[in-house]
Image 1 (tube, helix red, strand yellow):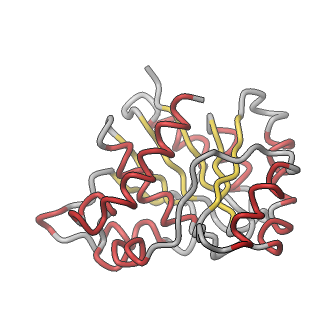
Image 2 (spheres, helix red, strand yellow; image 1 turned 45 degrees about the vertical axis):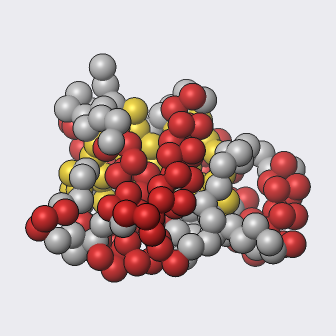
Length: 212
């Protein structure tokens, strides 16, 4: 059975795309063989994996793609159960469109601020355009760095309801442990009790998207 392909994309930088990619892929790797495709020229996912200590190697395979993204994803689709593509933070290159054409679902991380929501409006148009070549493409917004006690974060749920792309029920909270995991080249699953709350919310997101 060919892999399920998830593209993690947003035209705006700083939304936590790579953090979501690497922790999502680590959680998926607990369920089946998983590949991370680093399509971001900054190479953040590749750098993350290189930081992993030898005794705790990152659990998913990570490759950088410089050529045709859709061809590369297609080449590996039979060898993995899950493929997660970390897209570049721009719509000006063709990489994001090709990732969405190759994907089953695109996840769009959005920070809980009006400016970030406005910046994501173009993503809705990009998804619509990608569906001309991939009519089965599904898309979801995902709130990232959510602060549950913050009034603005709470109001974002209502704002997202007006958006053309549905938001996942589950979100990623603002936690220092995500930054710690990146610095150590591991996922939150590798950080014992410190990482348990974060791992639980990543698991909840995975269960939600696999059920959709």
